[in-house]
Every structure is written in structure tokens, then in C-alpha cells.
Length: 219
Image (cartoon, rainbow, N blue to C red; front, side):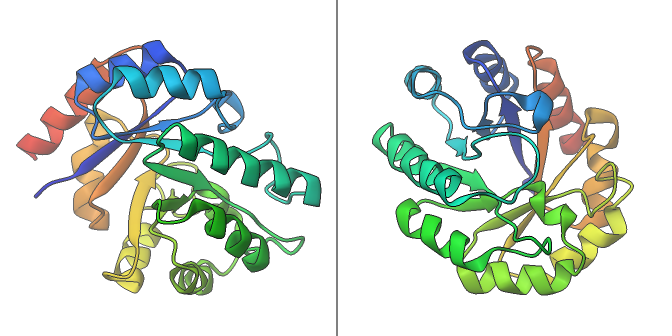
């Protein structure tokens, strides 16, 4: 069983640490303390030049709610165009409307800018009341994967819901578990949910990733 480990990082040092630890993919952000925002072009270029694993760019103009103004949506589209110039391997985003549902019109607009890049819908998904219906919408929109904790504070606490998403989505969309994922609970989380992708912060410690990999291999 192969489990993909995606590391959320916000600096070149953290990206290099995650790569050394054996991460399969990076989610590159700024401001992880607010859940991540769009990284600078300089940071993105620096990371791409130093790592050999895929780098997905967070596209989020600010912290706070996932309801964006027209100007903010335009900024997101410009940011997608910019990270594509720097050869991003994928993008990560999430847009909701005033009723905390997927803003389908806005998502379609940004997907047009993403072109053939894979797209992850981030944990804005966990703020939606009817997540199973939202999953169907994301499948229809062509989203590749969803990052979720199952609507709970941590992925392990939301394991039952995550398993339901995995079963509901089938082969049409990937479900990636995130939220408090660490080496000590990664194997249990995979067993209980059936996910094949995990999302975790690396910070500056490659052991946070390498120990998770070891735990998964011995599970």
C-alpha cells in the first residue's frame, strides 16, 4: 500500500527539510498560522529550483473567510497565472459563497486559469454543511482532490466522516486527510479511513515526515 505524504511548508528551509524527510509532494504557502496564503513568486521560484518533488501552490489572497470579493478573485487568477509561469505542479484553493456552499461560478473561473494543472480543494470544504453534496459538486467541476479533517478538529477525530467521503467519491476524486496528522497516528488514520494521501506540516524538522513514512511502512 502506497500512501502519498504531502508536506505543508512556508519557507525554503522547511521545503528542503520536507524533501529530505521523504515527502512526496509540497504544498507551498505563506502564513501557515492563518491556514496558508499565496506564497511570493520569489519563494516559489526558490523552492522549485531546489527540490525534485512536485510543488503545489496555495492560492489564497488572505486569511479569514473563504468568501472573496471580485477583486480578490481576480488576484487569485493572476496568482495562478504567475505560479504557472514558475512551473507549479498543481494549485490548492477553496471558494465558498455567502451560504457556505461551493462558489461554483468562481471555481469554474479559476479552473479555467489552472488549465491542466491538478487542483486540490482545501479545508474550506470542512466549513460546508452538506459535504457529500459538495463532494458531488467538486467532482462535477473536475477537482482532483479534497483536503479534509472530516469537519472535526483533527483528521483522526473525523475519521468516520473521512471514510464516508472516500467511499462516496470512489475513483472520481482523491480524499486527502489533514489536521493533526503525525507519525503516531498516521497508520491508524489510514486504516480507519481508507485514504491514500496524508497532509502534514513539516516545519523545519525532516523527522516529522521520515518518522511518518516509517510508521506507515511498518503499519
